[in-house]
Image 1 (cartoon, rainbow, N blue to C red):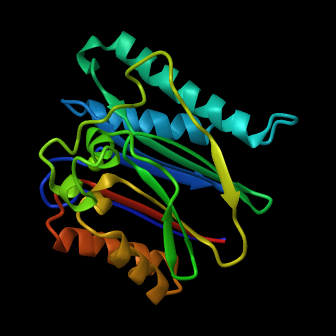
Image 2 (image 1 turned 180 degrees about the horizontal axis):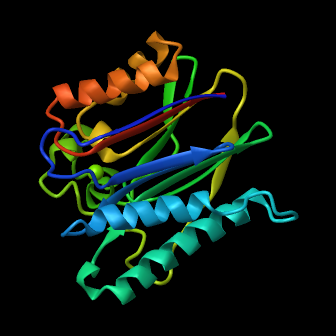
Amino acid sequence: MKVGAKTDNGKVREQNEDAYGYHDGLFVLADGMGGHQAGEIASAIAVETILNTNFDINPISPEYALQEAVQKANQAILEEVARNPGQSGMGTTIAVLYIVTNTAYFTHIGDSRIYRSTGNALVKLTDDHSLVAELVKNGGITEAEARSHPQRNILTRALGTHGLLELEVSRVPAVNGDKFLLCSDGLTAVLEEDLIQKEISKNDVPQLIVDRLVSLANDSGGVDNITVILIEI
Ligand code: MG
């Protein structure tokens, strides 16, 4: 498995509230929200909590382990807010991918995305939990309009804002040559999927592709923090 990863502040935001991390086939990306640096805390707690979960305990299934890990991250953020009421309202998106025995298990909350790239096709595996995604689904606006919509940052689900979390875990095959992309909305808000796929298929080194995608997002305005993880099986 080859991995490239990068987070970047972008050109507009004062600080980077995105976070990411990975080890042993487990990849986590989070895009925090909340004033006074709280978003940074929420995304860091989420990534750390999930990365610290032991996925090797048998006979727990990967699906169950993922559910547990994300629920634990949710609780950890809520506990942090309970200790520090000044951080009230903080939360984060999450995108988690776990690759084991030729299978990729994944789950997400919010508008951080996971894509699978096979051959020349880029397939979005996740549906954003956001207001604009609902509007696109109902036919009110197009994908392109969603990218520049004034309310494009409004999430319909976030981690750390409610005790009970609705969570779906899915899986797809992960075979030799497949590529998986995790990204925060700082990438997809400014780059079209066709362009992203073109960059992915142009190069064989995941880190070079990631660096290129981040610089293209910055060239397109860098309106948000940008985080990208690219995995080649
Ligand atoms: Mg963002």
